[in-house]
Length: 487
Ligand SMILES: Cc1cc2nc3c(=O)[nH]c(=O)nc-3n(C[C@H](O)[C@H](O)[C@H](O)COP(=O)(O)OP(=O)(O)OC[C@H]3O[C@@H](n4cnc5c(N)ncnc54)[C@H](O)[C@@H]3O)c2cc1C
Image 1 (cartoon, protein in one colour):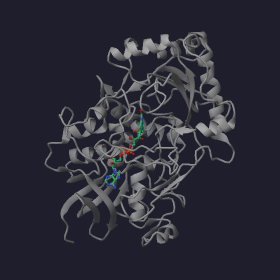
Image 2 (spheres, rainbow, N blue to C red; image 1 turned 90 degrees about the horizontal axis):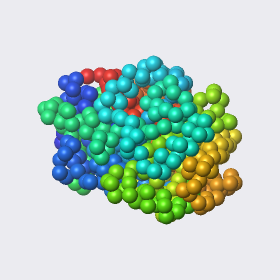
Image 3 (cartoon, rainbow, N blue to C red; image 1 turned 90 degrees about the vertical axis):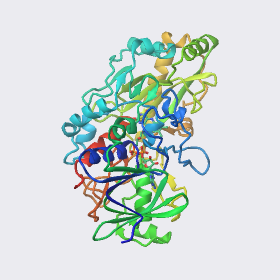
Image 4 (tube, protein in one colour; image 1 turned 120 degrees about the vertical axis):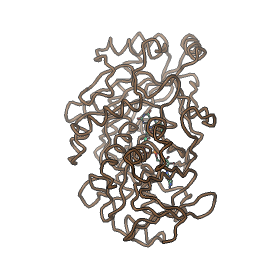
């Protein structure tokens, strides 16, 4: 095949997991090409890095793919830049509970298997717990209230055996810098001659042949053909299934309807999309708390999140936590208070499932995304949120917090009110899930069923979401799959 670029292993997507895969394979001596749709600003400290991507105190949305629901109600943020979502996220570091992994029933992914991997990930990502001296007043008041209400006080988001607790969050923040996966994994290997990074290059589709994989991409508006012996898809929970579908891998009827010639019948591609649903329980704030917050901001460091509670709802089948309950200083992504503070409540064991599909064969076309939040027939997710709202209100109503806040702004007292305000935690997973059933897309090494030379390594692999923010899990997935890539 006459190709513009040749590589041993092409890793597609340089996000949380892709950065890890590329780095680990390059370290091991493989000939690696990392293909990323967004820009690569170079190693940490390079002057070109946009300030918002580096500054960990706010979510940075300057490099977003721009996916949103047609009615504008939900934005589905994903970063288009080296480091992927780890370059614009909240940098909260968590791993979930051991049972989250055990229940997958997949060799190499049990709690015992991932525990040592997480130890390495936590070190690489430079995870630390916020210091007592950094805690700003609203979070301090919430800590006081939580302790008085009987929560076990602990900062144990990175402990696979910890159950419900309330404490300071662990974060991958160094100074004020969001320590993204590119800084953590790519920077140490950037000088290796066997690693090349092709940024601003959008992968359209792939085609596996007997001698390798053809990767059809677009760079500077022109087609680019890459030939690789193997491919690792790490384009994320939206990007990976879209590339597979454009390549003819998915539900044949859906693909044919869009003019894509079906290559492989894998109906699970794009299905099983799920996230942690959230609602923001809010209260108006008065001048005194606003002044405290302004003073903290003036001192230079005011992250919107610092504390988090894990709680057990009445729906929990196993006595393990199924709720995150965490105070926030921002009422929306502008990181502005707009006269209120919030306590976000999330169901971290959701049953609702949606899907993602290409809308056309144009790789720049936005996909059709349907998360179906709170759509599970038994009403599980809604019931868990209801319990969480009660826990958030208890925190707000405790005198330690109550004396600083006013009345609720948003009415969440009815199911209709919850449904009208449900949002997401930025943690979509599951669209190329591992397993053996008819809806599984990959085996436990990440290899796509029916293909020999194509593996997936990102959050789309997770059959069921963990009770955790998903950045460290995506990094962990990169570490695990990298060990299974033949070199
Ligand atoms: C706003 C926000 C806040 C979040 N906050 C937190 C948090 O505080 N803590 C936490 O743990 N998690 C958080 N998350 C979630 C977490 O960051 C993600 O789950 C994780 O980064 C996903 O990693 P990934 O490797 O699966 O995908 P990504 O990191 O999204 O990487 C995919 C990469 O592939 C590239 N790509 C996609 N399609 C193509 C293509 N066709 N061609 C070439 N390249 C392509 C993308 O540009 C991207 O760089 C947050 C997410 C968001 C969006």
